[in-house]
Image (cartoon, rainbow, N blue to C red; front, side, top):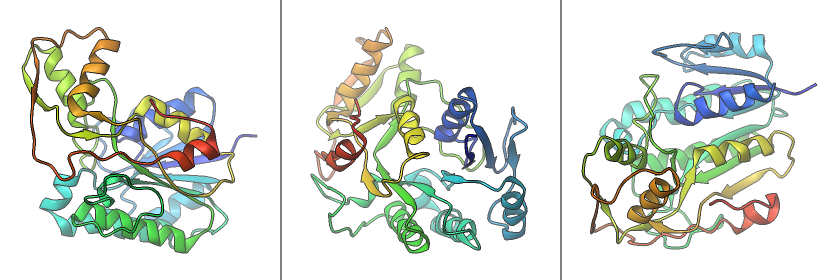
Length: 280
């Protein structure tokens, strides 16, 4: 019998992809999110998990064997604008989820490359001192989860994107990646200016959710970096457009930005060695 999987933030960007993916593979999967615009599955519950009594009732009903905690007040700019709400629905939410949770239940948490302030080649042992609200909150969440249970997977992820077409389905979910927005605009024959001198790592959400599934039966608990080979923002979008037959040549405009660091190449060698997978 397959395990019972609970995905928090199941109607957000990554959560939607992952819930539908596990459902298509006949997992016993449940989801929870808050203020859902359009609920399309009876196994997804519209509950504010910050309410401990509601959270306890849901967890007692489902009895999850594995939790993918994707719920958060998403989006670095939103976190910077409203740090009080960001704290409540990042750190505060993790505290509620962990309260009275059996320590034998594995939990997954997606962290962020925003914790690597100014680092050009960070790995899992890099000394961290993020200078932004988003990074500080994610790092605090990491530590809460590590202190709760050894059965954790913490994945530090860069920009997660698809090939456009993302639409928010909850008030709490973020606006989606700038890459998806750029591709949507290009499809509408709008010109977009994208940095060609700023190089980062990325993750395709379709690839990411396959990696998440690998964790369900894994005992290689710990903290891992996830990242594609480094590309400029411009080259990443051009690559996606080319693969999806999107005509970008008159609409994707290279420009230069001043971001520190100009290049950040995240070391994912630990993940690649343990799980025998590379991101593209």
